[in-house]
Length: 115
Image (cartoon, rainbow, N blue to C red; front, side):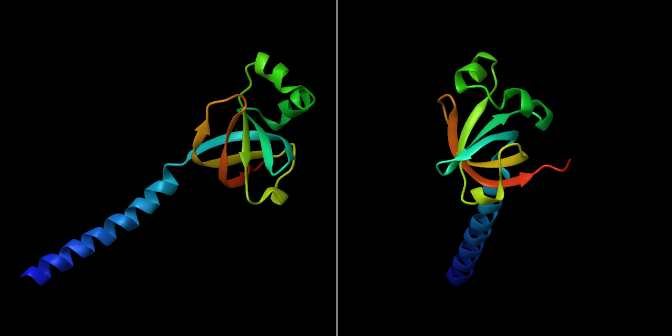
């Protein structure tokens, strides 16, 4: 009987660990943004801005964008070669964001939005 209880406990533990990793991916913060610049191993994105609005804001300073209340985020990302300024993207953020302006974090996944 003790062996059966041990087997049930180990099976339950493995099941819970497997489910936890699935939820971790699903619970990532997901944002839609336009990439303003890519340099120094990170990208600067403007949240809730469309690619058509990109031309209007691309030459503005961070201070000017702050005055316009545009949400900016610096994100590190392992595949920066796959993205460029002006891309409209959906971003999965790993581990939340630092509360600064611009905010800072790490992108786990970046997908180009279909036009």
